[in-house]
Length: 543
Ligand code: BGC
Image (cartoon, rainbow, N blue to C red; front, side, top):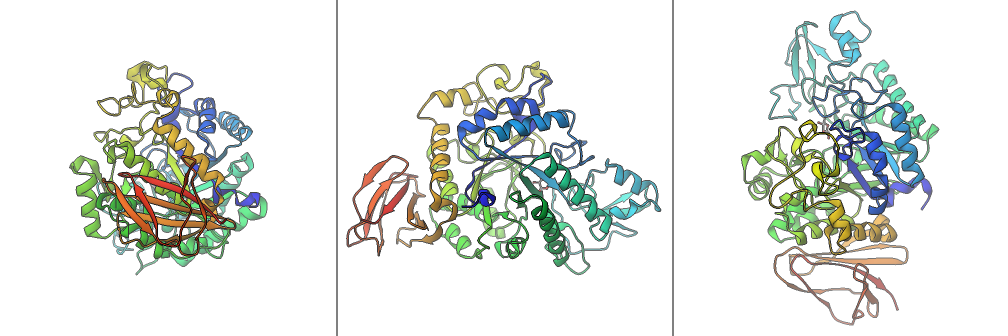
């Protein structure tokens, strides 16, 4: 595979700098701290780190409200610290992508300050204004729990301004060519610094148009193609990852003809993996992937189980949402907007087999997987914190005070690390799990390694098998000479399954995770017996 297509077979790791490691004992993680932990990421085996926003910000939305696109938040360090971190990462063979927030700024950004202060300022037209709150009435509200309108009256400006997220995040006006130029400059600045690409935040909402829902508009694609051209011309091999929380057919358009985004999150498959587990029935996963259009060869999906936001339930039916809430968020406090504010391990009651099973699905389905920091050891959360803070807790390094995250006095930490019966940092931490060869951490590490050395997972065609037993999710991934047969048992009981492996008669079968040989494929159906929540990664080799 050519070097510029590195993302097609990469494992990503998403992390929040504030939560990772504090180098200067102020209670906040920072870039020097992160740099000192890069060997950890290398030992886990991931290829690329995605950092949540690191720019100056009043932090009303944890940095997604940017006040200066060209600097580093002082809590995290300086531009020199960033360069130091980036160079160390590259020395270790790790790539780094940044969050690129195109859609909006903070209301503290000097552009907005100038815009609201003076109708004649050239910055006025950097934002979207109106004398009434009635325009674009068909656009939905995203942060439902907090916002009641996408328009907010600004006293100083004497007009309403438009925002798709918090009212502290005014939307930029992409109809204004100057705004487009500004954002291309931002992109250039960070690419010149050497970053390997961007996770582009909230791209469906760049443009507005009366009579539409103001999402995925043609003009948005025109601008994004321009952005991609700009990158390809000067920085080949850098990646653009699209955050469009949309149905697959709508996300499809963000890949263009291979001339827009190289990567896009597959949002709808995520809740369906949880649904399949809860019902012990593969149908939701199979149906959504069968309804997922083909994407150009140079492109790749990006898959995840959890991230820094609530587990979004936007891409499910109302009935499915109710089911997900009842099953995975029985306490009202666990719900947020149209989602669930819990981490992976608590969602699965800390059950090791379920955590492994879902990771196995993540690592073997099409798409490059993303691990959310801490989920590799089954970290917990705190649903009592506001907004999404409870899934952004300090990384649990060891059992020392502050979980080895910081040397600050405990009361100065941005949050205390997770305590409690099941997920307490004194028992659940990196040091303990690294020392125990049987830990979840070692299992995930093995999955990362196997995923990376098995080309079929990166680029292989997906073909579902259709055994009668619906609690079995089985598929093949084939690429050139390599074919993997992956089998998952979604149920809590042992399951027998007979798989139709037509065309494979005589093939040798080996589980690449346990290195165990299975009987070769015979003339009839291939019988397997899977443990509760068991999974097998079987390599098929023609004799
Ligand atoms: C990010 C959120 C953020 C929002 C507004 C989302 O897509 O993932 O964390 O609050 O964009 O920037």
